[in-house]
Length: 529
Image 1 (cartoon, rainbow, N blue to C red):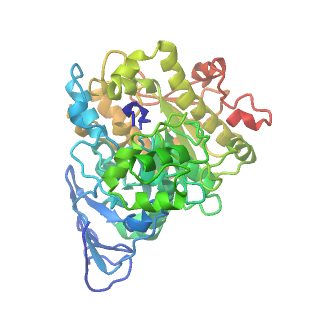
Image 2: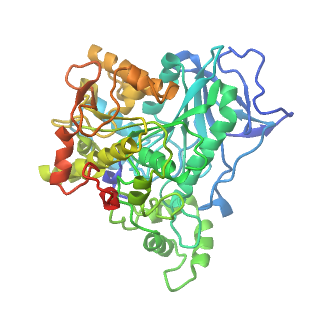
Image 3: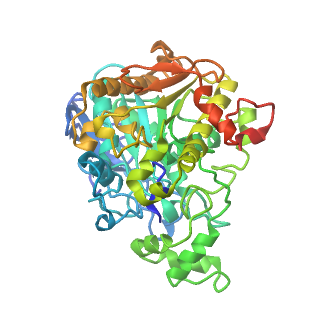
């Protein structure tokens, strides 16, 4: 896999018996044992927020190995078992770069630390990776809302074990429960075989949401207030979810950061060409030489490391993503988002949607040679086609149907977000402000104004989880209207709170580039394709 394609981007022992939700007697004890459908989970104080209970590596699905490789997830149910929640589970298999092949010469120390975190350096990988993590602060009283995080990474890489998305500070300061999950990636999550289950990585996400619904009350969370929040591929996943589960939403709100259902131009109905390349490279047979079922059986029998390496040699699809990515199955990913959008056929829950001012700056860190080869016009097109214009469309269609909608644009540039001259407010750079983790990710102190912006954004995201329909309005943010001054600017200049702009200030470039913002919609579903 080419790294620039990043879209950014527990052992168990059976004992006793107990009902789900059973806990240690002292409900205010940090790290108290919690009973779940996966077993009794032992927590511990979060490393940088000692009053927060941190529970890591909780299995929500059986290990997807053997016949379960490439198959839909199967719930892990072992309520009488025990889970040691002291460590993250391994990452799901991902074609990250060998750090020895990376030249970070010339980048500042903070940028190198960001890269090492993104490249999952020092992490183990295993197919036994379908786990989730919970951060919660023991506090008597009403149940707390839940923020459920989906990571990005072009569906090729990514992990819930990332310093930038630790939920400890949000849980500590904002009275929310934070959950992050692992889900399968690349060929393991998106094999894309005709006649076989597709998009099993997206099915992992749904199973994790169901686990949270069934178990989060035991951690002090409110199963009736779950906000699904993701960035890049994680945001696209959340938006896919909004169209796929209209009859049983579970979640009560969405936060989409630099990603939507239409952002990355998914047009393929299968990944068959990439599969046969992988099968051939593994010695499992070429197309026309063996039956697909025989190839599948053979690939299932290979070590995951060999499968991952062979899949990494397959040519990428003609879109932003890699060779193995979501495919149109008309169940979880659709071919007719235009028609569905016009009909309002999506979960009509409140949404906060936005993008960074200069998404392309990210490429200068993860693929500097590729970035240098792009003309200024190419970089602008990258920003518009994958982020700016799809964000505008997603906000427009929600507002069109009366869904409480807010749209932001991230401008933050500070010493510890600086990558290189002109890197700007790059793709992913807002995540550390949402989670309050900039210093831990960059290993560089925030400047005072940055601390204020970080706290402001933490409060906004958490406020949305508390009251999706009203909290942002109470903060003074206007609901989105494409023709009014309702675009929320965050981190602009030395501003420590939001300011507001006309969407057309940025969206007119979409029209000039032949991209739709939805504003000219006249019953034409092609506006959303």
